[in-house]
Amino acid sequence: MKKKQTVRIILFITGLVTLGLGARILLLSDLGTGGIDALAIGLARILGFSFGMVINLIGITLIIIGAILKKRSLEWKPIVTSILYGIIFDLWGWILFNRFTSPKLPSHKGVMFLIGLFIAALGGALYILMEISTSSVDYIMLAIKERFYLSIQNSRILLEILFVIGAWLVQGPIGVGTICIMLLFGPILQACMKLLNPVLIKLGVLSKESRPIGIKVRKIILKNK
Image (cartoon, rainbow, N blue to C red; front, side, top):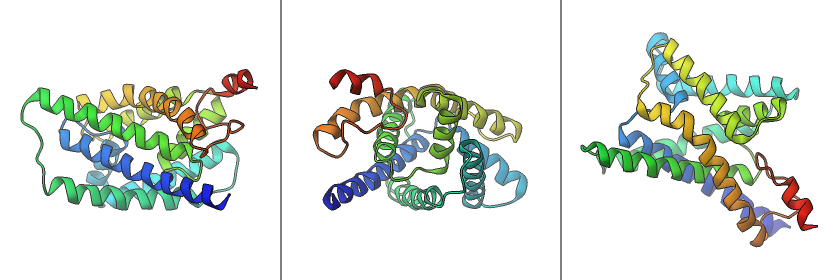
C-alpha cells in the first residue's frame, strides 16, 4: 500500500510538471493565453499588482467558491498544489523562454499550440486521476461538476467561458488561442482521462472499484463485474 501511494505521488507530480510544460508551450506559440491568464493580466493592469500576486488571489478566490459549491470547509491541499504548480510553471518558463523563441509562420504557431494543448491536457488528466489534490482551477471545475452534475468536458468549457468573459470585461489579452482553449481543452482533458484510466488500472495504480473524477466509468465498472 505504501509503495502504491508513493507511485501515485510521483505520477501526481509528473502530471503537474507535464501540465506546466504544456501551458508554457501554449504561451510560446503566441496565439493567445488561456482564459484565466488573460483575466489575471487584465486585473494586474487595473490593480497595479504583479501577475503572480493576481494569480494567487484568483486561486484563493476560486477555492473559496469551490468550497461553497461543494458545501464543505476550506481545503488547504488545492492551495499548496497551486503554489507548487506556479513554481513548476516559472521553471518551465525559465527553461523554454531562455532557449526558444516563438515561431514566425502561422502554421508553425498552430502546430506548437496544438502540441502544447495536448501535453497540458495529458498532464492535467494524470494528476487529477491520482486524486491527491487539484489546482484551484481544477478544484472549482470539479466542484461545478459535482454540484450541477456535469461532465468534466462541460464543466471545463463553462469555466473557460466565465474566465474569457471576465478577461473581456477587464480588457485582458484574448486571442484565437484563448477561444480554442475554451472550446477544446475540456473535451481533450476528458478524452485523456478515459485513455489513461484503463492503463493505470493495469499498472495497479488505480483499482477497478475506484471512481476516477470526471469520467463516466460507473457503467463500465458494472459491466466488468
